[in-house]
Image 1: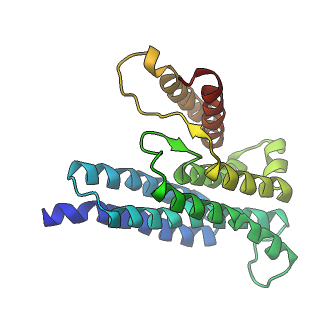
Image 2 (image 1 turned 180 degrees about the vertical axis):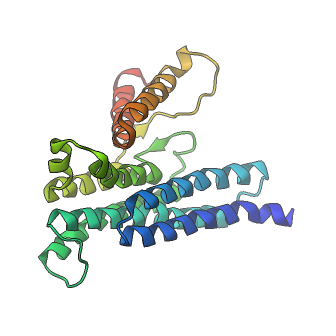
Length: 241
């Protein structure tokens, strides 16, 4: 029983480790490796809760530890990525000195601030058991970390102009912080009954998401997340019981 008690927290710490290592690669501007490390951290984040429920060892310590780990992996890492993208939009990635470009690029960390507020609020919000209110921090992290990869692998001039424009990046940073904490109920992705009628949105969305990822690859990630939020708004307006 003693070993089982520590397994979920050990997995959570591995999530934290992934986030810490990802930070070192972001500093080196190796965004793709950082992206995969964050993906691994999010994967571990899912399984720490799974094993806590499986072994019936959920605890207040585990809850707080989970949020602290997520703060690094899904909060600090995307904030730092946005900082570097903003800095690059000024034609430099040199972090030495502290000029106007550096000051303006620090606004990328509004993502980190929004993530911190959401994680703290999530711990005391009893409404988010089966579904989420506001965009979860892991989803937002994937959204932000996919942007430099979209920029790197895309041949589109339009994409290049959009993702190298400081004001567009600032808008994305502020919007992500808002959506993280917005009172927007997102429809649950859990399939509880083996019925098409009861899971139309879930099955349709998951199928569409797979198609987006297959055809658009890294660009599919932000498209999936934007679609999720928009479909949730539609679901809340017209289909919610």
